[in-house]
Length: 393
Image (cartoon, rainbow, N blue to C red; front, side):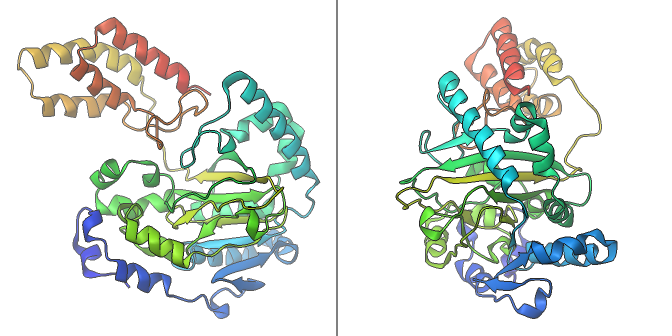
C-alpha cells in the first residue's frame, strides 16, 4: 500500500504526503490468525497474556516463534502490542513507585522538576534517566524490576540482542492535558526542518533503531488518559514529514484507540506509530508510567573521538578563514560536520534540557552560532566546557 511518490522520492516533503495513502494503511485489520500467540485482539492491537506465555520464553524455539510474531506486529502489523501481566508480581512496581515519588519531590526542591518534550513544564512530573536513578537509589529494587523476561524478549524481538535500555518516568495528574499526535526518537525528536533534511531511506531506518515501551505503575482506565494509538500508522513511510500536518493530526483524533491497562501491564510500539498521551480527566488517578526507550546496539560510532578538543583547536582557524575569505561558509560547515558533534543525544536531560521543545543545541549548531555571533575564543571554549559538563551522566 505504498504510493508511487513514496517509492521514488529521495526526500520526504510534508506538502507531498498523501492522506489517502495513509488512510488506506490505517484501514487495515489485525486478524487472529496473524497473531496466533495473542490471547485477544482489541482495537486491532494484539494482547498477549504473559501469565500464559512467560513459561514458553524459557524454551529457545518457542521464544523465537513468539519474538518473530512480535517483530511482525511492530514492523508491518498494527505497530503496537500489549503485554498483560508483564509483571506477575507488582510488589516491585510499588517499591519502585515509592522511590520515584521521592526522587520527584527531591528534584522539585532542587531544580523545580523536569521539563518535557511534548507537554508544558509543570503539566506533569518527569524523571529523566529513571533507569540510573532507580539503580543508584535502590540497586536491589532495580535488579528485581528489570529481571523481567517478558520485557527482555520484546526488546530483543525488535532490536536484536545487546540492546541499550533507557527509561523516563512520566506522572500525569488529574486534569493533565492530552498531547498532540507525534512520532518519537530519533527523527520524531527533530524539528520539521531538520527531519526534512534527512533522505527518505534514513526515515525508513529510524524506526528500527529504537523501541518504545510503557510499564503501567497503576491501573489506567480510559478516563485516566492512557496513550492514544493509531494502529498501522507506523507503516506510512513519510510519516516523520506528515505528523505535524493539521490534516494528519485531525485524522488521528478521529481514529485513535486506547487500551485500558492494569498495574503491571506493558505496551510496546514502534517509535514511528502515531501516538499521544491522553487527557487525564479522572478526579483522582495520578497516571504513573515508566517509559522505556530501548536502542539498538548498532547506534554507535567505531571510534571514541575528543570532539570538544577538536572544536577548540579549529575555532580560531575557522574564524580567520571566514574573515580572510579563504573558505566559504559552506566549506567551513563541511569542516564543522567532520569535527563537531552534530547530534543532541545521548545527553543528561536534567542538566541539558531541550532548547526548542525537542532537543538540546548540538555542538555543531553552537559552533555555527558562535561564528555568526562573533563569539570570542575563550567564550567559545568556556561554553563548550559547560555543554560537556551538562551532558555527563
